[in-house]
Image (tube, rainbow, N blue to C red):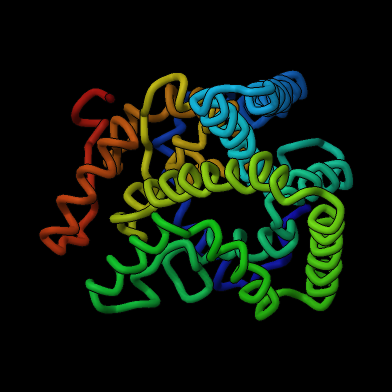
Length: 327
């Protein structure tokens, strides 16, 4: 799944948005090492997914289990499902497997339970990276809705139902800009997804579907929306260092989000696997002239709420690691 050819102007845009050479001066080899795929780390992450979902399944399935055990089981399954869109995201960058076809297959399979077309997501995500903050980017809003009040409405919608809305809109948006071959792939993938869901809903009791899929998906929606909002909301897309946010968070949350909280690092080095993003952060953070930062997701939401009250769309959480000696 290599990126499709892009117009010359978009290549120029991509070049303008990469970090300066001074950021990696002296650590080029270390950065290069962090681009390497590690199959065992990825297998460990899939093992985590299996363990969490199996644990949740077991808690929910205990005969006569107390409500709190059912609730805990749903949360466990939801946290497991939350790994799927992150796996898929790495797959879009070709980071699940060295073999292109295997990478695509794994990407498709992890996208299937959450009803996401891999090719549609890939098409829109390429535009998000190479056209960040421009017409073809639908991951940021100020270029599409000019009034501050409408931007805040878009943020609220993203927080509440963003992942559901994007799942529905993604194939439509992708079809507008995709190549003929990609459009055929999108249609084929959507048909396979629809067929799989038809079989599940046709043959399984609705009670099982609710407990083992629908309720966990609600957890995924919350996690994905908060993570996605923190990634770019209240940034400055004209400045690569202020366009994406690093959320330091706790070690547990970072691991359960597969280190996607290091989103600035991801946009600076999009070909680095998510499990190596903490290493990138350690190497470059204190070299950054500026960045947008939050110590936790709760802190980000609290500060965002205060900004909403003031109707303030200026970059939130600006720090200057180079001057401050890092975080």
